[in-house]
Amino acid sequence: MKPLTVIGFIGSTLDASKFGPSRWMKWRPSVALTMHEDLRVDRFVMIHGTAHVRLAEYVSEDIAAVSPETTVERHVIDFADAWDFEEVYGKLLDFTRTLPLDPETEDVLVHITTGTHVAQICLFLLTEAHYLPGRLLQTQPSRRTDGTAPGSWSVIDLDLSRYDSIATRFAQESATSASFLKSGIETRNRAFNAMIDEIEQVASRTGAPILLMGPTGAGKSQLARRIHDLKKLKRQVAGAFVEVNCATLRGDGAMSALFGHRKGAFTGAATERAGLLRSADGGMLFLDEIGELGLDEQAMILRAIEDKRFLPMGADAEVGSDFQLLAGTNRDLARCVAEGTFREDLYARLNLWTFALPGLAQRREDIEPNLDYELDRHAEREGTRVSFNKEARARFLGFAASPAAGWNGNFRDLAASVTRMATFAPKGRIDIATVDNEVVRLQRLWSGSAERGDGLEAVLNADQLAEIDPFDRVQLAYAVEVCRESASLSEAGRRLFAASRERRASTNDADRLRKYLARFGVDFAMLR
Image 1 (cartoon, rainbow, N blue to C red):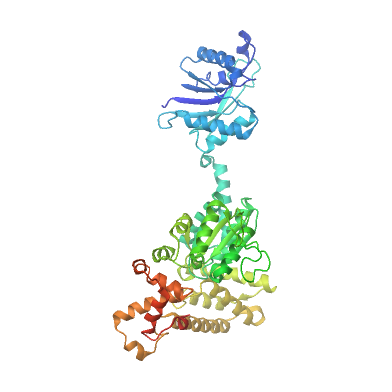
Image 2 (cartoon, rainbow, N blue to C red):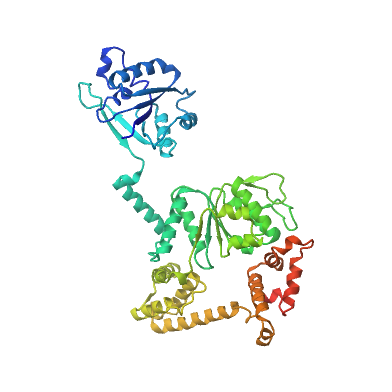
């Protein structure tokens, strides 16, 4: 059995009974806790002020009389104002950092019965935060009238999982929060549900940036809104949810939209603009498609995340905004870092909490509950309830869950599909004919998407392709893919020539890429 250390304040009132034999008829918490047969205290760390040195000596002598095996260590901590929370917590924190404690070789109990209410609260918080590596000890006088008993004691373990009723309530609360993040949809995909559980814990316990990755239409924007709503319900944020699609921001417009500008900062700046970061003060900022931001904007975003301050365009003084950041992207940001189009330091800041949302094709078991969700949304929008008949529902779900359904646009495709079927439903019932027509429409839609985005066939004709060597075709296909993903010819050039550009005196990547594409009769405009 490990030796036991107890840490606590001397009770300037309760421990200060009259000196003399009558004191043994009174309950004195610091003395009484060493009088229990079932609580052997080997070391008592007694905290007191200079004004109570004599009392501490007297109580130590009485402890020695009733419990010779207890070593009393007296520590003087003086407070200018014992009711000043900041002072008390700060001095106790400093004290705990110098106090030799080894939870591997000793058990530690923190006595919270004595001391001012502020001191008791601070001891609780220090124990909860593991600065004091132990459990809480409470003592109280006996209900007997003769006053001779040492009273009673109880230990509070802050590991709430040990308390069944409390653990059950926390589990229910966590499940409710996770369901809230999923808009109440009873999803069945185990990997997705596990990811939502993790997001619920992160969103509830930290204000650090969260990065949501996944293909277009996977639900990043909707999940970001739910994260904000959850934090607002838990009073972790009070401000608004501000969303911006970074793919729409270019040049001075990007800087102005994000950071604001002063009047006259650039041509056309006729009035002052606060900017989205200031609009998100006290709330959450969602930067969707953050991989589309330019390097200058990325640098300022990083500074704003870390320092909560930034410089509006044309301003002489910085402004502040305390926001929490959510970011979304359908790009591989690690690859973008390697290609030089995304800042490594910003990626490191965002990559602390990264969650990859799977597309609908990877969650086919979730199509049915999301189908019901989309029908409910349609009813809310239009004020009319539409439903499937039994055969039509089975027909649609059979197709939706089959390999023939590509779901290229993910949940956006599903939402659009439900809207179309509900619109064409005769008398509010979706029948087999409506489903069959929608299946044809979806297949045509996905077939067209595949043709537009499938390699070089959509760029060059058969004769042109026949003249290209297989080796060159692989290179050209990759260059075309990068061009389609990039906002400009210059950006595509920086990505494609990321290594060699460092070794050249001139780095006109746009011209270099233009000439490369021209060899095969391709230009950037036709790829966009």
